[in-house]
Length: 382
Ligand SMILES: *[C@@H]1O[C@H](CO)[C@@H](O)[C@H](O)[C@H]1NC(C)=O
Ligand SMILES: *[C@@H]1O[C@H](CO)[C@@H](O)[C@H](O)[C@H]1NC(C)=O
Ligand SMILES: *[C@@H]1O[C@H](CO)[C@@H](O)[C@H](O)[C@H]1NC(C)=O
Ligand SMILES: *[C@@H]1O[C@H](CO)[C@@H](O)[C@H](O)[C@H]1NC(C)=O
Ligand SMILES: *[C@@H]1O[C@H](CO)[C@@H](O)[C@H](O)[C@H]1NC(C)=O
Ligand SMILES: *[C@@H]1O[C@H](CO)[C@@H](O)[C@H](O)[C@H]1NC(C)=O
Ligand SMILES: *[C@@H]1O[C@H](CO)[C@@H](O)[C@H](O)[C@H]1NC(C)=O
Image 1 (cartoon, rainbow, N blue to C red):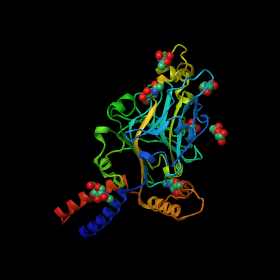
Image 2 (image 1 turned 180 degrees about the vertical axis):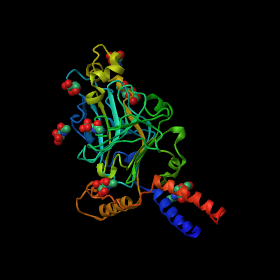
Image 3 (image 1 turned 135 degrees about the horizontal axis):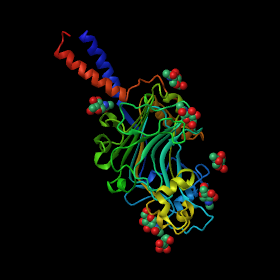
Image 4 (image 1 turned 30 degrees about the horizontal axis):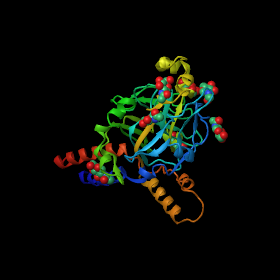
């Protein structure tokens, strides 16, 4: 009995710890940060903001995307052009060419996030047929909102119960409503001036068949496993996620989510930040017109000095079948002389629902096993 349990636990321990190890599949940082993203290259017809998202060529030339002297990527709104009434201001929207399937972890280490009246930035992910395939909002804010909040968006049928393994708090719980399923953060400095003053921080997303989990750490609290290694990470010291969307009866996440592309964007006004009742609540006195567009977008742009991302890196990691697929895709891309892009190849990655549902469950199981082994060795007759 004891022996049987020990063998079983040893097997499960090795399975669980193997699966907690993730290998780097893409490092967006330094001089190659902007490789692997598509620039939207036209006006914001998605959230109806008063911006034109530049092409890569124009963005590089106008320095709305560049790598600064510290080696960090800057993604910003134009704060140097005088915009006349009736015109749009230039900004950026980037979409990753790679698609990320279950079995991946996405990490952003940033020093500054955009904010200010009319500003609506996000670092998020979506499937191409949105809302089919889901959306995950990792960083999102409007106007002078002080804190970040997480969200997932789905088609009808996905709800968010109060998960036990969540450090943040539920706000909205019907994921097909306009707001999505939102989760607030209890800790300080998740966004805005506080985020920057603390030296920024790290947001991590685990996209797994067992669920979708997100963490936020302000700079002083970033776990050692993230500071020490870039080629592989071990998430076992990450602790309780800030937001947990477990695959459960309330939401079958493997049904509602499809492979995701990562997106950075900064729009101005538009469907959320610019809605009069919402805009007015924080920015009514931002100018004489009490209007999002006229009081902010129009003018010399000096009000957009804080409307930029400064990103140390975005790194994506994979385990199990997702890792094998990413490696196969890289090999195929490298050895192929055909014109098939790596994006297309990545897109063919299939999710492997038969992967052991480890990750957080693995941590739990490991604790149970360790406890069981100790109990078993101390009390071998039980
Ligand atoms: C991850 O860290 C835990 C705790 O330090 C360790 O038990 C486990 O073996 C590690 N896993 C890998 C794949 O390195
Ligand atoms: C936005 O514009 C593009 C290109 O003109 C078009 O393909 C797309 O359908 C538009 N999207 C929306 C939501 O209008
Ligand atoms: C600015 O946004 C408002 C609200 O969406 C819209 O009515 C207006 O036409 C936009 N103006 C420009 C120049 O984009
Ligand atoms: C959830 O939201 C959707 C979309 O607004 C709505 O159709 C559905 O009835 C809502 N579900 C519940 C239980 O209220
Ligand atoms: C969840 O959705 C997946 C994919 O559609 C399906 O294979 C699975 O059976 C569903 N699980 C449950 C418990 O309904
Ligand atoms: C830009 O516009 C603001 C607000 O109208 C004004 O206070 C500021 O002096 C202007 N800056 C320059 C350099 O013209
Ligand atoms: C634009 O903002 C940056 C900081 O983000 C600042 O260094 C720069 O001086 C501003 N440009 C102008 C023309 O004010």
